[in-house]
Image 1 (cartoon, rainbow, N blue to C red):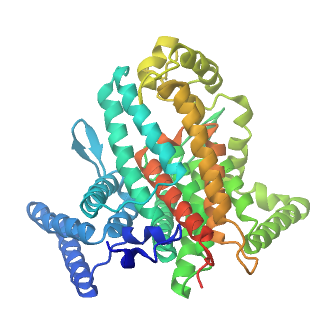
Image 2 (cartoon, rainbow, N blue to C red):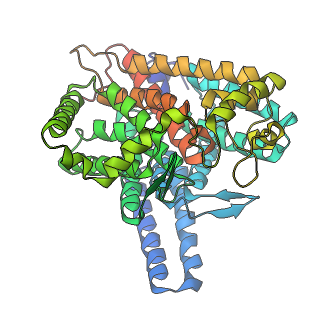
Amino acid sequence: MSASATAHLDGPRERLAHLRYRTPRRGQGALLVGLAGCGVLAAGNVLLGYEGSVVLSLWPVAVAGCAAVVLRPSWGIYAAILSVPLETATLPVGGGQLTPAKALLLLTAVVLAVRWAREGAQRSPHPAHLAVAATLVLALLSVTVARDSGQALKICFVALAYTVVSLHVAGQGRGEIDRILRCVVLSAGIVGIVAALTTGPQQLLGDNAVGRAQAGFAQPNVFGVFLLLSIAPGLALSFRGGAVWRWTMRLCTAAAVAGLGLSLSRASIIGTVVTLAVLAAWPVVRRGLIAVILLSITLLVFAPSLLTSSPQITRVGQRLSTLASGSGTVGGDRAALRATAPRMIADHPLLGVGEGNFANYSSDYKLYSPDGAGYDHAHNLFLTIGVELGVGGMLLLAVLVVSLAAACARACTRDRRGRRDPLALALAGVFLGLLVESLGDYPLRTDVVLAVLLIEMGAVIALALRASAPGKSTLPP
């Protein structure tokens, strides 16, 4: 690239321009029509029961989808996020399970890596991305001590792909960030509706709950964390765009809140409350929260039966009241897990026990789940990272938290008119809420949570870079 062509790439935000790819509008239209046609053909075959032709009709979908991602990598991110409700549709590959979201993100990462290698243009990564990269290097080194090296390698490969996607998101403009996060909120709304329609009777048995909603996710806590990542951005986007988008975001956010209540995930509910507390720095949400609090106090004083007559509200309250007991693990004791984890770290301080290998070592310390196997994490983010990656992993996690906090603070700075970006506040709240949630769980074990988390990390870095550019604001004009 000539000096004249690069003269305008001076500011931190402008240096990202080369990471955006555009496809001619005619090509986009033809591709979308082709995808829609193949999708209709596949859906029709499924509905009509023509099993033999389903496979044939899906091949054009796959080919057209790959072509779309090659031409416009962001489309792969849209499609991956929107396919999260299809988490139960898995394909066995290499001893693991490949979901539509994972397949699309892996394809997108490969396309981006090839483009960057071909064009030879890469920006300086944010310190948060450097911390993630260093953690991946440490995780690869931990393969040498892991009892299940295949598991460790698979986790590292998938996390590397998601990091590539996160780097791409960090180089996008405000409009692209809005579109990506709208896809997250749409998926959350869909799974929230699925939870409302499919969840049966729920019952509390001491510290445990039966019948919790999970809407196709691996377990209710994973479902709750995904909704935690979606609710605050949904509120922020509920006041942007045209009327159709605004009301769609509002309905999806409401469905996500309902799904969170049905999940009975204590850590995720508390994390979401923390998220909303941060978003309350935005006057719109602050006024809404004050109205909700005043209404709740009024009902408690003058008509308490209206609140206590709701079985779901009662169950959520009773579920939250069990947090102090420390024995929320099904058939186990979280206090025992957390008490034993430091001893495991002390026994393996350098490289830990290997990425994803907590379960292979926990039985050595007499930590057994109800089915007789070892627990796969310590129900705490820092302790699990320490056990699996050693002291170095914990230090890198601390660096990541500090770097991400700095990016959030930069993105949330006021512009020249004294305004803060609601979306930046929402993402800052999400990370703080997730940090609180991680004190009682380990959400990063699930691919979909890790993917959305890294995508949102890229989004807040993009907003931070835009805020730091001279004369720029994260808020749209």
